[in-house]
Length: 346
Image 1 (tube, helix red, strand yellow):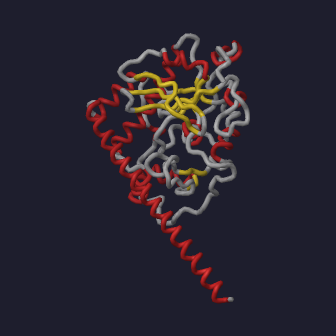
Image 2 (cartoon, rainbow, N blue to C red):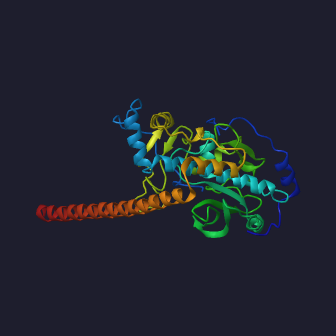
Image 3 (cartoon, helix red, strand yellow):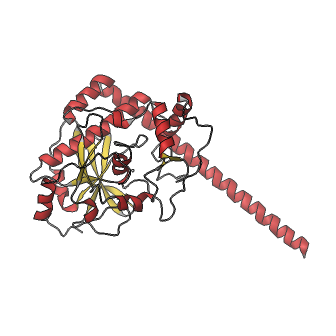
């Protein structure tokens, strides 16, 4: 898979001449991230009437169930995700001959469907070419960007690399891809679906523009990943509420129409597309720390949140095991009852 020493000249030229196209906040197009098996995408269903679109208290209660995090900390972390994207774009663009990258998965879906990050999402995904890993490893580090791990693990059989920020407290998933990008992979876009790339904006003042797959061609890729109704249906996945790698993961746990989801998010006062950044990643980070206190203060709040999240994971796993045990007991009781009735009938 590492047989290509460098990108072709035509690809490099194509990247340097690409221009930003239409506003990404349109619905005709968030590792790959939380995927479902083919044909398994949940159908749109009627949401519970108990959740009022007009009552901010109801909306906030549901939001806090999805993301049980201090609102100030969550705003800080979402802004940090934008700053990380901003830093990646700066570093990759400034590297010799540029390093091609593109957003993918839920990050791409958020750019298209929400005009920014998916409000409840809690990670960032990008792709790059495998043959660029050594160049990425040589990118300069600073107080914000901490370094690169070329292989941190795997996801669905694919290597996952990590870009580290703030001494590894935060990270961005990087999926190294072969060149040219193969067709037919359900979890990743093909060469024609990516190139020529398009620019996507993520913030209210349009200062953050990052490369993503071709806007006119990437719809089929997202259809493969999330099902054909991703444009108007939201499935809530994140590490707090419905964790893809958790034992109790349920793709149907919370399925909302986009209209209803947007109403809940707006009533709860959470709109990631309205977050503002500065002209550079460094300036964005400095403003974040001015608004939210010292770095040590933020780090301690984040560590407290992570400990709470581990507790929730363990509790959810225990509840899931208990549910399975109850199901098995009911099945055994039913089987015993059926056998008893069969004996009596003879």
